[in-house]
Length: 186
Image (cartoon, rainbow, N blue to C red; front, side):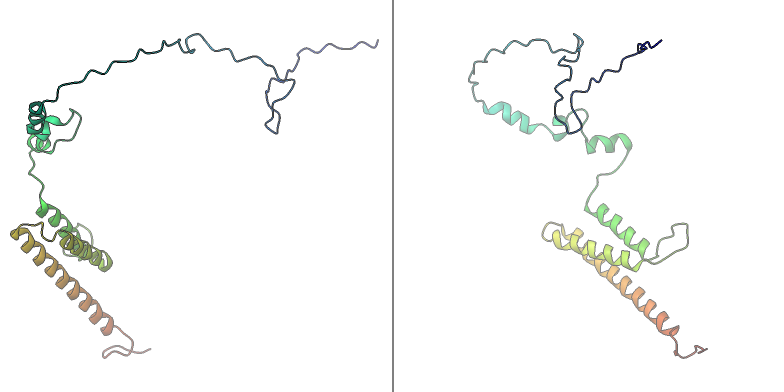
């Protein structure tokens, strides 16, 4: 009884490409079934639009230029005046920027109480002083007399603070150095 068994299922390779990426000659040539909803509808060619010259009027442009910036922004745009009135803030000015930078510098100098142990970050302090110095250089001629005076005095005070800290660190290093008076050599 030498009967061949008929297979219960048949495996058909439906891949279109071989391992090299080339099309297989025995691959099925059928296109994938695309649902009717996914097929794009035929689009009629649009008719050309005739150019109609518009009269040039200076008044509408002048009226648009006269509108405040708040009115020209879209509803979703940022409007600083609106935000300040709604949330009760003040107009941001150069002095506020300078104040923020000085507070950061003083935090690096250890002058602000941050709730943790006060530490001096001499590198951070130097970078903040340099940053404020760059601000001073780049705003020359663009500041009011009051702003210029405040900026000059602030940079001077920060540089003096930096020098005091560096001198204190140097004195402590000399005091604790091996062979310094008052230190014991083991």
